[in-house]
Image 1 (cartoon, helix red, strand yellow):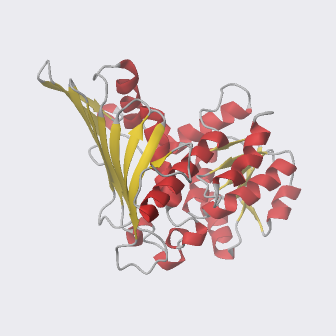
Image 2: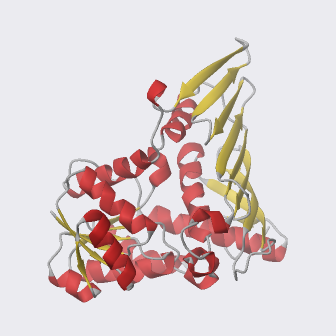
Image 3: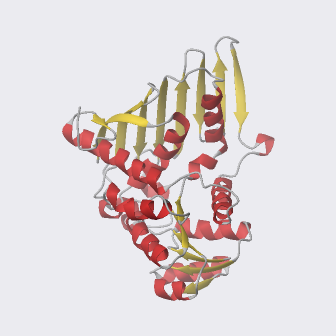
Length: 336
């Protein structure tokens, strides 16, 4: 197969690495910035082109779209019009209904796939199985926090030029979606949200740097989630509580710990066994799953319909913050 990778920031280069690990085929790469094209050529030995049209002119089989989130839809629509399969990172289309063109197309055939990276993380998969199997009883409450100070996210570049600093380019909303996707996958559909969305730091950005929200799930469980661009050291932490057990996940401890109340003991689920886990692997596994879906060997586990739902949830959190009221999903624009 032949691939056109569009966007050569950190994610675009990562997708090139993924494809090379998988020995997936020929790779051509494009970015508007000459320095990034040169870097991709030097680091990964791929052919680079100076325009998207030139890349498409090479007749790729698949387009990998790793540009800033507000540009994904433009490139996906172009790939769709050309009859090419495509993969997108988490997309911020501005309004949920702008994704309808991709949803309409995917109802007819498999045309493309939105990213769902965290579903391939081993600890998230453990949490999924613990909830699905009932091993820890019915989960009643979730608390979750994901954070990193924006200047530390891409320390090799000026954070002012990083798309996350700009509300127009997505402004970190795709990171909220990144976390919400696995949360919905593990705990089920979200019924309603209430939230505080703020810009609190002294960082020179024109977007929000904290999303703090309450979540009510269709299962009856409730949760709280914080996603921020302030925390001085990157981490993710989660706690799941039922009447029978507590499950703890800490990104840095590389595993899930479960306290079984009736047995009065801890059970450990380390990532990768004694050898540990390389986080890069979840991106490789995601891309492998996508390629198998392209070849008809698997059904891709995410969809643009679900992506639209994530956009609706983030929009509802912002609406709740603006109005001070809970927002019922499925009724975005209606407060309760």
